[in-house]
Image (tube, rainbow, N blue to C red):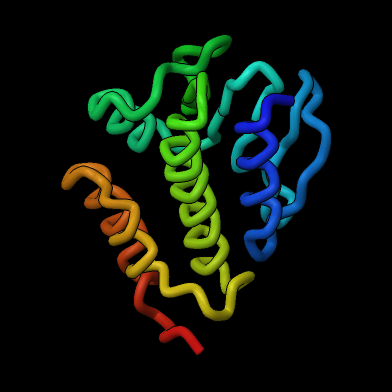
Length: 148
């Protein structure tokens, strides 16, 4: 793995509820509650599992590319060519992570007791459209519980 990919794996692995495992096509997979949120390949490719609406917004905003193997799927690809690309990869992985936490919270499962998801979304500085998709989809759970 490259040093940049190593840093990404190290940081994401420290997020509450994240488990890492070898990815079946090489690299490292990130899972939350048994479901993959994304993975990194040794060659500097970050693939994210999201929804089609978020995928479309990320593509429109130029924040990601269609998945390198399944371009019509809900997956996207982000390429890490150097250290300057790490913050972009981290931002997208955090978005996928928060999306998963919101989906779990909707089902009554809460992995991160101190996560203020609304503040986390603000820090991601998403486009108006993308932010709206996330907040509208999960309006019922974003502010359900105040952080401890």
